[in-house]
Amino acid sequence: MVTSPPDLIYLVGMAAVAVNAASAVLETEDKRMDLVGAVIVGLATSLGGGTLRDVLLGRPVFWLTDVAYLVCGLITVAATFVLARRVRMPVGAFVVPDAVGLALFTVVGCGIAMQAGVHWLGASLLGVITGVFGGVLRDVLVNEMPLVMRPGTLYATAAWCGALTMLAANAAGLGEATGAAAGGIVVLLLRLAAIRYRLRLPTFRSLG
Image 1: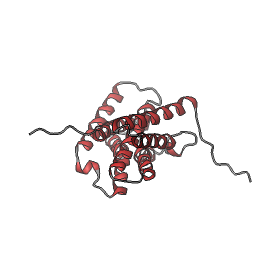
Image 2 (image 1 turned 90 degrees about the horizontal axis):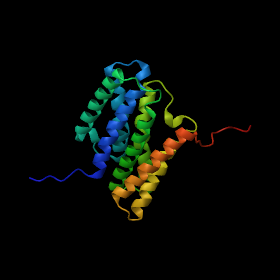
Image 3 (image 1 turned 120 degrees about the vertical axis):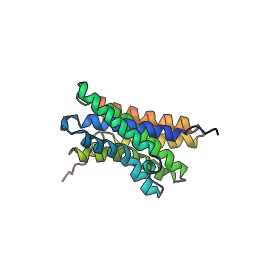
Image 4 (image 1 turned 135 degrees about the horizontal axis):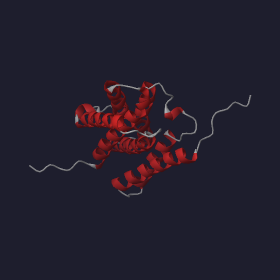
């Protein structure tokens, strides 16, 4: 029997799990966690955003219905943990993989919401939730202020701009692959530019 190839959202989702799991382990390097701690943080980071998205959509949780996601996360955590113990990683090594993971998960979350028939505004916000929530769990577990809450990081902002770009591309009839690529590139470029050039949004400050 001939099986159909995995669709784009599935493949991007698997890549997102792997990248986020790796970035989580890299961030825990200075926390002196053992392998069990790294697994907990890595899985929370790589599966958390998608889990919340599925709960909000009322659909089966993705890694419970397809264990390949869970296996992918576990293998990536273990491999990154071993590599980080043998190779000296530069300070902040997790930042670029984290930006890539943000881009991939934003695209996946937005795409799944679109397939579920969610209004475009809700779909864009589900893309943001899928992109940022795993990172929130990671930072809470390692006792850091979540990146999304730090002033001037353009974290959720980058994700939302990318999700809106993806929706606009699809509305223009450019196709799923083109829309996903455009949205992901916008997220990645905005996030990396914010890191490199210290781009920031205005912060709340009372004049009283």
